[in-house]
Amino acid sequence: MGYSSLRNWLVGIVVGGLLVGGSMASVAQARTLDTAYGDVEVSDAPERVVTLYEGALDAALAAGVTPVGAVTTRGGDNVADYVEAHLNGERPEIVGVVREINIEAVLAQQPDLILAAAQLPEAQYRLLSRIAPTVVPHTQPLAFDNWEAEARLYGQALNREEAIEGAIAAVDHRISQLATAIDDAGVGGTVVLARWMPNGPMVMSTELIATGLLARVGLAVQDAGLVNEGHPHSDILSLENLSQVDGDWLFLATLNADGQAALDAAKKSAAFTRLDVVKQDQVVPVNGQLWSSANGPLAAQAMLDDIENALLP
Image 1 (cartoon, one colour):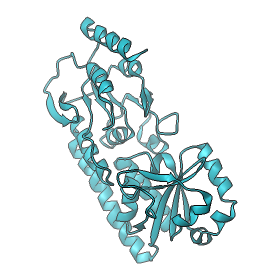
Image 2 (image 1 turned 180 degrees about the vertical axis):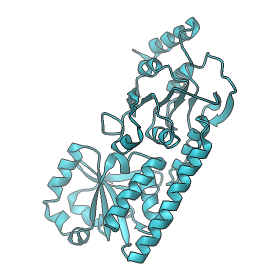
Image 3 (image 1 turned 90 degrees about the horizontal axis):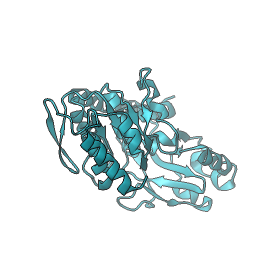
Image 4 (image 1 turned 135 degrees about the vertical axis):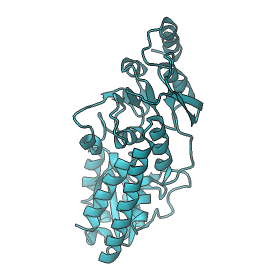
């Protein structure tokens, strides 16, 4: 269905009064939130929440709310593995992928609140806001702690501010404990986070949640000067240039089976085996759906689990 047809279809439904619990319904005890597309009124007690962004799903679950709908994790066909333990036997319906939302599937869930990403295009926002109040965070320059502001906004939308503050505080406490343990064990040093694609590795920015966590527990995060300011990762490196990611620790993320197969092949090459970090056996394979795509308090805790297991086995 094209944009114009879909827009007309939604307008017709709204006018016909067929949207249940959407923006045409009265909002009891409404609160007003400051969002990227202006003030949005939300109910004090949303019951049917759809998340269109992994960080929104993470925050909702951290706040004790299981959404009725969500998008898939990047590179996967369902929600990310790390959130499975937090679903409590419930499973959100899949309403699209990260870059392609199925508006009809969202509508079918009859949400009374939609939590979206800062990158949501305005045209999609206009459609979604006809279904239910849609909360879109303000766009921010790339920074490792952006996830905290986003989680707080989602917590406000869910009327679960205290739960979100508690989840963020728990991450801070865990970081402090882990930093002390790593320092006491003398196992710090330099670290590079790279995502391995079918064509080779990309060095990840030092301004991501994952690299921010590595830095906060006491590691010296490097990007070899390969990542331009404001970009999440470098261009793909050739095997011949792998020495640029050498150091004390190398965290390697793969998004899917194709990336893992490419990494397995690269591990057999001389360019890979002659790296000091390989010789020291301090290459840490991690899940790319978590380490290069997810964010939120639950994602932070899962990444801290990986850090602890690697450095303090």
